[in-house]
Length: 618
Ligand code: ADP
Image 1 (cartoon, helix red, strand yellow):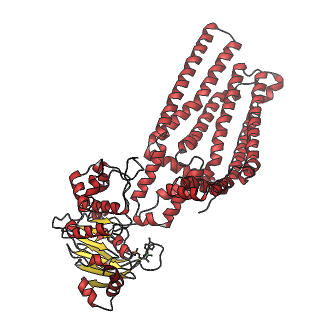
Image 2: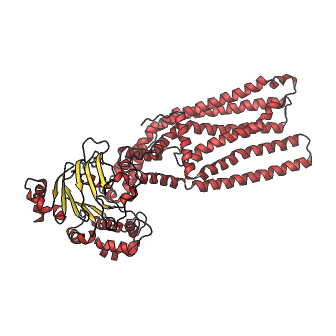
Image 3: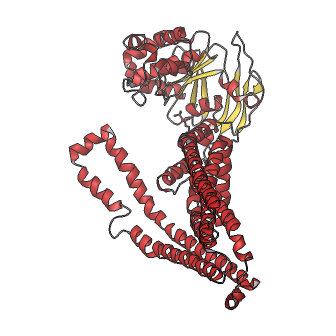
């Protein structure tokens, strides 16, 4: 992915980010604008009031008018300070949720995207890039209002406040003869052009400083990688053992020191001091000259009798305030391309399209479970792959039957299940449910027909019962019953909080760590609880000890009941009881039949596999 981002693209990416946040929580934008307006406009009110006070003191000195200005200055300034403080806290309170909202936005996207997109290398790369940017970005996506919105709105507010307070400076004529040239429109135009010129110069310098700071990016890459790797690495208990055993701190700490970005003599220091600081300093000088020009112009006009000392305070104060606001705004604008790299990745991620066709047909809810599934000449290529994972697969499942899918590693068994569950769509051919292409059904409705225990299933760090019921509210009796059927009854009885026991320790210190076999039983119970017409078990007993395996198999018929069951298994002995066995080889179904039928073919793959494994069963 290219690194250079033009200013135009950067602005459009920031504008996109502001709109994203607007959709999520408009108060983020509103509170920022309200606070920024109060913060940037109130100094102008104070400057104007002070000018009136000084003018009165230097002029007629009317006690009544002086009293009026003093009271007005005190009360208005206090009210504005109070308003600014209240708005500040409102903004802080609203913005406190930003990080969590961004997390939720990303999680929702992950949950909503096509499975094939989750698995794609492009998504993996984007997630990696986002994580990298998060460590080293300026303000990224989260603080877009604190930086972008605030400086733009603040800059505009400063410009409007200053314009309102300084416009009269040009309108008031000088009376002294020698300075009358200051009244000429060209003199005013000259000052305005000079001010604009200096402002542009300041912008150019700030952009240059920012462009050069982009050179810090490659330095921060290795720094971030090392910094994000080692603290996590050293904190993992399994690795902490190795570290102590081999005194690896002797190599870890020096590696971290060498990668440090701001160590003495590091390239980052040279970039900051040699290529960033000179432009930043020059920008400051330009700003000082800009203020100086204003001082000279205002003082000359006052000297020529155009206005009194109070107005001098007003004009100088307003322009100084404006310079501060503008330089903050210009600084932020100059840094936009640097920050935009992160926004570009997060935008690409959030806008990853879903390609799968989403049908609208509801699936029939049949009490008789008369569902029929057919693979009709199905072939499948994984995205980006050139070899067929499945080729010309034809198969019909009989309702209520037990189908075993066997074959060597890589023969296409899991892919077959992934297509059946519509995690992918076939590249060629069709899969039909009750005679209708499964793409035409509503996706969530179609998934209701299946309960799958994947080989690499994952349980959530949540209470056991919520894992089983996949919900905060669930039928506790049914959950317990399913756990017992899956052979988890004894373990459940030993758990102090029963179904409310947390799994794993991430969210609860008292959470339990399950062994591989126990977790597999919970996963089986979760599938049973779903009570779907099709139950699919991918290597259902791989993590179980021989006793637990025998227990599950002895109860399998009871567990499965009237459901249609599909088992994927390496262990052919566990398939003997199935009504039908499909033998996969190189992505194709090469044999199908009962155990006895398949064994009769002494030249078939099944016979070969059976004999290869027979030594372990006898
Ligand atoms: P089995 O379950 O029989 O071990 P799989 O269905 O997992 O086999 O794999 C079938 C073929 O598809 C293998 O050649 C495997 O390398 C390939 N494959 C599996 N998953 C992916 C994937 N996500 N991307 C690309 N190829 C894959």
